[in-house]
Image (cartoon, rainbow, N blue to C red; front, side, top):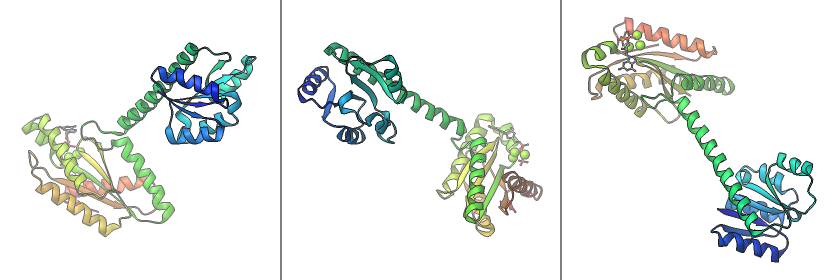
Length: 288
Ligand code: GH3
Ligand code: MG
Ligand code: MG
Ligand code: MG
């Protein structure tokens, strides 16, 4: 574990360093709070073992620092620390206290425990982030799922409103997909869906967003894209998919809508109507 040791008294600092290093920890020593914060930022220690006389505003500084905040803080106090003072310190971010005189064994135990707690916290945060990512992801295609792409649509409409930039959307629905499932089986249907998602994604810019609305329906968000540019993109998507060598040939119908100041739901509704018109007109085409 990486341990930062902030202690103003050199002999005591040396002794603690020897004890910690003997147990395999790597230790970095500092003699004042300013240096301590700098070292926390640069070195990201697991644990900061801070003597109260070397503390200053260090706890607050570490806990409010965007880089250093993850470091667990262990405070070495003079005898006479009251439970109230300890509770106050713990509220401000101190993880645990050691009260002088401290034995070597106690230092080791507490440092190890503090480091383990910090590791667990980081694991939980990482796990939370992974879960959040899963909540946004469509399990089959790996694209944004319905919830995520609709959230992105809301954000893009707000941005378009704020900056006065154009925004277009394309709603896509694979043609006669039920037939593909019926003739080739659901597993092949799934493979075609994955392949179609890949073809669509490969033909969009980085700032465009592609999501699966559900079933064989997709939504493409095209920021900074006006009607004619959107028609060009949509026609390219249609042609690429029609020409793609998927396991089973598949075509797509596309409904386009360009934002005209309305709410996201109304924009979606217009794209949906255009899609319906494309289906009625014979499929494998783009309508606005
Ligand atoms: P249209 O050209 O009018 O869109 O015809 P369609 O058959 O594609 O339209 P419809 O909406 O009637 O049927 C969509 C079909 O897509 C129904 C279902 O069998 C299939 N489907 C929906 N989700 C999935 C999926 O996750 N995997 C597979 N393999 N098929 C799916
Ligand atoms: Mg459909
Ligand atoms: Mg349908
Ligand atoms: Mg369909």
